[in-house]
Length: 151
Length: 143
Image (cartoon, rainbow over all chains, first blue to last red):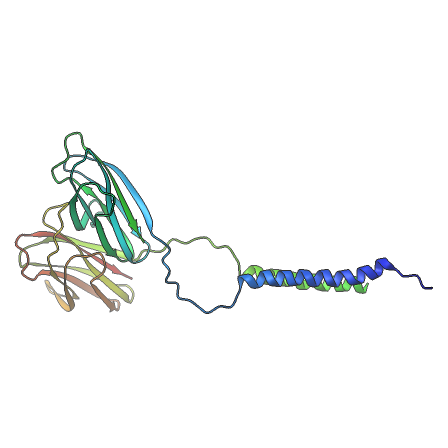
């Protein structure tokens, strides 16, 4: 009767098996990240961004925020809060050449509300939006909250 | 000895696969979109008046022109009167328009032209809708 070297037999069987299993695992993992697929046009928007401006508006003053649209799309502007509760001007536009003021494209006189009062279509670029006094802000000023959503 | 050689071979194959695999899944740093360069042309437009602005292109590409604002008195209210908006080449003390649109203010370019490097001008002009002067803002986006 011949003695069997069980340790060597075990080793001969185990190494290739383990290596093949490991190789299969790596190949599977690798293929998950490199699946050939039909090219798709990246048209899905990255999502809209919401920015909130909290400001204190002086008599004859403005409370303006600059924002950058990362792609063409729709901008909404909401006067969410005014304290005291008064009607003010709300606008959206572009910064002037000096960047000091906002050149409004659309404006509306409004009180605060729960939905956007202004909607505009924009290209990729920098814009501004905010509130301005239409003669209703008293000497104590007015606290405003303006919410802008943009691409 | 044969077992060791086999093991080394398979480990080598695994190493190559791992490196190749890693190449397809490199984490990348998110990039901020680059905003194109822009110039803002502002001024006051008289009733039945016009105004133009010259700019120079250093490279070929699309030039987008936006009539963005008409405001009788800053900061508002804005008016939505329809104006003439053109692009052309400077001609003495005027701008010789080669392409134009009639448009109300907006925030999406109303006039887009593919232009080669040279000096150009954009012109805004009242078509008869104004009853009082307005401050205007025109944005020019170019390469």
